Image 1 (cartoon, one colour):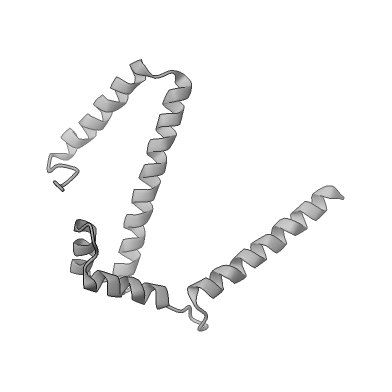
Image 2 (cartoon, one colour):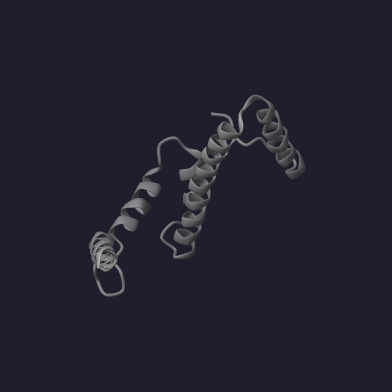
Length: 123
C-alpha cells in the first residue's frame, strides 16, 4: 500500500482538505453536511486517540519507538509489536489488579451511581 497521506507541504495538505470541504457543500443538504461532518469527526477522534495512546505507551517504555513505527507501517504486526501488545494486555495497576479487573470495578461503580441518580429522579 502506498503511503497516505502523501509527502506534501502542510499548506498543500490543509488546502486539499479545504477544497474537498467546499466541493461537498454544493452537493449535500444541510443535514447531509452535518452527518458527513460528524462521520469525519469520528474518524478524526479515532486517529487522534490511537496516536495519543501510542505516545503514552512509548513514553512508558512499553513500546519502543522503532517498534511503533514498524507496527504502524505494516498490515500485520511484527513479532516485537505483538509482544508489546501482549505486554500491554498483561500490565497491572499499582495495586496489582489487571486492567480488566479495574474496568469491571469502575463499571460497577458507574452503574451504582446511575442507579442512585435514577432513584433520586423518581422521588
